[in-house]
Image (tube, rainbow over all chains, first blue to last red; front, top):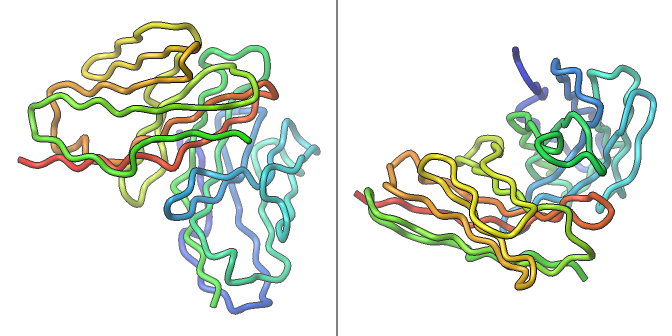
Length: 118
Length: 109
């Protein structure tokens, strides 16, 4: 099993360019998440999805869009990249969340995508 | 506001014991998680506490005191491969995870 796969692993963009990060999971997880990780800060949730066809905003959604057309895929788009979006992006998935906590809320992360916006 | 505090960096010696503390102030509490993240890699799950007390898993243990808003991760018999960042995360009343900035643990021979 591959788990959670992110592509690309590295990308350099110029300000104003657009791009899409792809996340794929093969664990049949319902929940998927996009986080960004910046030095000296905790992981910050950008957007998340509770199932195929649904998406919701997280803590820092501005400048990003997402889509979950298929259960196994979660795409993160930057329409007009800005230097402030230079970061490492992590996709994650989990079986469930909410009241049924226990091990069901353990996140499985992808390897990360390092994005630099010049 | 919601806040998770953990030391930025700690240094320990191979074979020793180290305790990494995490204090939190969140809107509600539905569990506390510890993740390990090696440099340049993805975070991986270590432990989960929702009730007060100590959870032991091999060389790693995690403790929680909900009344004090406090947790610690205890690593015993340190190995060089334990050099990593350790992330504390709390699930709030909306079942959203709030993450600390992580503690970078450096192990010296």
